[in-house]
Image 1 (tube, rainbow, N blue to C red):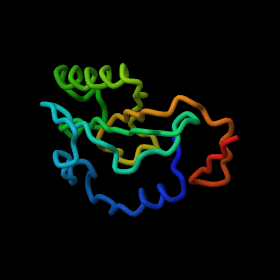
Image 2: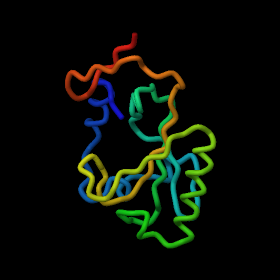
Image 3: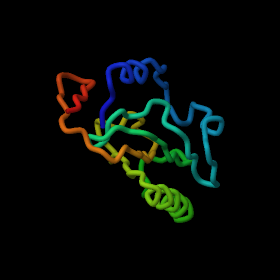
Image 4: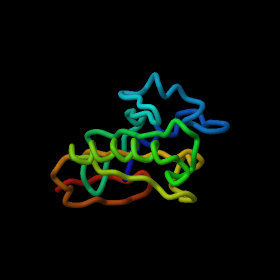
Length: 138
């Protein structure tokens, strides 16, 4: 998963949350679907690349309950979130969540799952100069 330089600057321009970015934000106002246990919303800043493919849609599933891990949710919440994942996976989305304690997890204290849809064709090469990475297509 990579951001182009412009996207990376946009991502870094958002104010840093003092407690939890998801709990402080108006998730209901940004959501495309609200269930009993979760919000489904577009990510504010898409990844530009995922598995060497251009990203065409990037959604987040965010549990309403503030938990660091899916394992901390009750059975009903887990099932509902899994049903959302299954629905979007069948539509061609990749399902991805970072582990608790991952240094790459930007909202470390609130579990969230990425749903990422990419173009079918893979880039022939990705040249990593420095973060953010640069895509070179051949």
